[in-house]
Amino acid sequence: ERVEATLFGNGERTGNVDMVTLALNLYTQGVDPGLDFSNINKIRDVYEKVTKMKIGERQPYVGELVFTAFSGSHQDAINKGVRYMEESGSDYWEVPYLPIDPADVGRQYEPIIRINSQSGKGGAAFVMQHSFGFDLPKAMHPEFGHIVQVETDRVGKELKPEAIYDLFKTHYIDAVKPYELVRHSFAEFTDEEGHSHVTFAGTLRHTDTVFQVQGSGNGPIDAFFNAIHGQKMDRFTFIDYSEHAIKQGSDSQAVSYIHLQDQNGKDWFGVGMSHNINLAPLKGILSAINRAVNHDAE
Image (tube, rainbow, N blue to C red; front, side, top):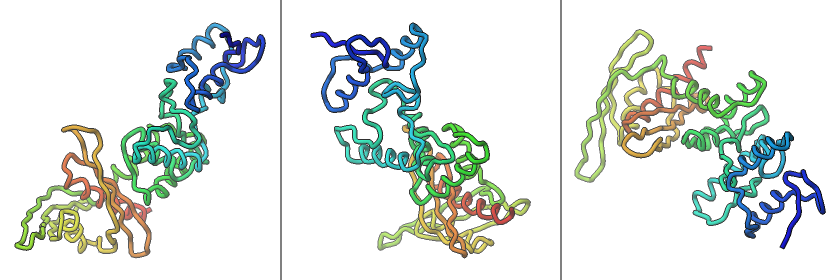
């Protein structure tokens, strides 16, 4: 059998359908066209080199922007689709706006989400998860999304993943002043009923002042929060936290996301990272407090 078609729209003889588009459309419907497009970037490079013609950025499957979502609603839908596949273990590719897994044609996930001034609150969180392994809690998405949007408005162009990570690091992980944990220790015992009791003792530094704190609770986070509560930090209420590991194996770090609320009902989020799983949330709490204090000082 003989099929005649064009290559990226060039080479019309008996018809002008693009062989790549036709074959991969069949592929998305479960029909194997018998053609290998596993490295479509190489095919594009050879085509552009020998024909001296440029493939359009929106050309199906091969264009530079074809796996890119600028719209906030599209970014959110893609995020939910990828998350659904991970959680359900689906055997099928079921991601909105992406009829094919970019990896099947040698493309990468990184370009799917590109952040500009029109991006929604979930786009920046998607980049942090898929490019750097940070799974931000959903309650934190609007705050970080706003930080990213302010920056895109300032620079007047889209932000690459590395720039988004730098914003995350600057605003959360590096929020280590004015309150800083100098040293600390935990003591834990379990009573006859099996309840855990933890005591925290530590040294904090605020600008040039160093002071001691101590507190008890049902776990390390509760004990630390109780210890600092009377040190001009009692305007904060602990709302929630989540934690996961970054990198796998013995060199993994714990990253902790802390959600506090001040007396005016405003939410503040902090992020702490440490190889010590008990230390990460303490850094996260101070990160949230420092962000609030520095905001008030502006």
